[in-house]
Image (cartoon, rainbow over all chains, first blue to last red; front, top):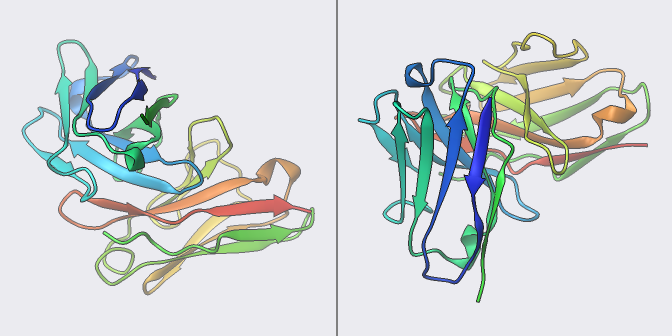
Amino acid sequence: QLVQSGGGLVQPGGSLRISCEASGFTFSGYWMIWVRQAPGKGLEWVANINQDGSEKFYGDSVKGRFTISRDNTQNSLSLQMNSLRAEDTAVYYCAINLNWFEIWGQGTMVSVSS
Amino acid sequence: QSALTQPASVSGSLGQSITISCTGTSSDVGSYNLVSWYQHHPGKAPKLIIYEDNKRPSGVSNHFSGSKSGNTASLTISGLQAEDEADYHCCSYAGTSTYVFGTGTKVTVL
């Protein structure tokens, strides 16, 4: 399963880090992904990372501001979010990436507002 | 990375069948057999119901089915049930380890 932590309220321009702890499977064997859903909107792909963290890919809306990372010794996935904007307000989900997403975290709310 | 196009809402009566479309381009939906569909109830994590265009994960009801023609994928819900009322999202692989989701469809059971 995937258990998320972090999130909360942050001012525009601020930073926040959210995490996702994996258990019950071989975390180091899978690509992982972050997906978000802004209020009233559809799901949006945010970022991907491969098994050893050497390959990372980002959606256009977060490129240059967000950084995905993982620690396979801690079975942990993270998303460092910098230069946050109001439009980054969303529920963020981590998931196992098999080119489809069957196992999801419970979601964590990130609100960007002054 | 433009979102795939889905109808904003679809409704149907109990027992009826409905179909949700998901239109992309030749760079995503039309290029890969990697369209997936998710059922999403408010406050919960999305649930995978279709992957690789038309495959159902273990445990997912066979009243969900997926298909694809060209740049448009479709999700059909046969024999609509009250618990099918939810948001539905499609997703396609778009090359170079990138993905694109649909705009989302709210299904209402009348």
